[in-house]
Every structure is written in C-alpha cells, then in structure tokens.
Length: 191
Image 1 (spheres, helix red, strand yellow):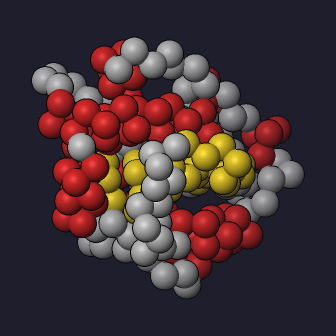
Image 2 (cartoon, rainbow, N blue to C red; image 1 turned 90 degrees about the vertical axis):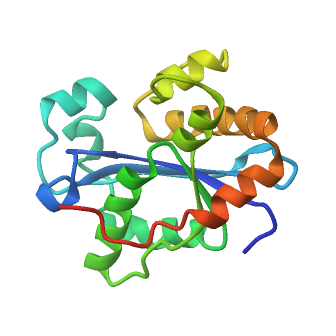
C-alpha cells in the first residue's frame, strides 16, 4: 500500500446494475496524496464505448452521447490501465457499492483481479458528520463546495476529492484510515 495515497474514483454508466445490462461509459480517478493535497497532475480519465446505445435519460443526466463514445476505446482497452492506476491506493468513492459493482463485474468478465483495495465511502464519512441524506449534492452544499461539472466522471471525482479532504480534516486522519481498513468491498453485490 502506498503511504496514505488515495485514489478518488467515479464511473458513469448506462444503467443501475451491470448484472442487468448496465455498461460503463466513463471512468475517472485522481490522487489525493499523503499531504491531503488533490493532485490534478495525477489523474486518469477515459470515456468508454459501451457497445450499446446510451439511453436518452443517461445522455440528459451526464451529457455523454452516443456520438461522444463512438470512437472511444472499449472497456477491455481502458480498464487494465485504470486498475493499474488504482493499484496500491486506498479508494475514495461516493456510494462505493455502486461503482465497485461495475468495476468488479468487468474485472471478472475481462479476467482482471477484483479491486480489493481498502475503501473510504464518502457517504459513510458524511454520516459521521451530518444528519439527513448523504447524496453528493447535499454533501457539497453542507461543505460549501460549488457543484460544477456534476454527473461526469472527472467532474464528480474533483468534487468528491474536495469533499473528502474537507471531511477528513473534520474527522481526523486516524479515523479516516481506520474506516479504510474496515472497508474492503470484496464481496459480490446483490443481483
């Protein structure tokens, strides 16, 4: 494990479950280093051609159209490099079970090792600090972070990284590390 190096990640998909036909259409990640600095120079981003039409409601939500992914590489060309980027890092994810269900489904399909990295879910961090609901928009509002670039993987990664750094400062480094050590999502999600 790299010393206190986090990879904040996000995915965009065509649906809610890879087990019900949902496909990846975008992945992104960015490093938060041991000094709790967001490293935009250490980032990964790619659109993915899902091989199926993107539903119109997903295009409306994300802005990702069939035209945008027409010449994008398929998942089997993108994910090996993305998984190498994540290797040895603690993952930070808003709603980790969702993103990891897609990434680990694809890992299984492509013969890649599953992501067994320690995980910090920003929803769980938020629950330790705030009452009520914990979607990304509400977390950002509570932390006075302007929500620009939402519903695109790289935009959500930057926003999640900002929220993570602020919440980690509020909770303390030790608590965040303890949470990461307790949370390794290595089980298969429900169908």
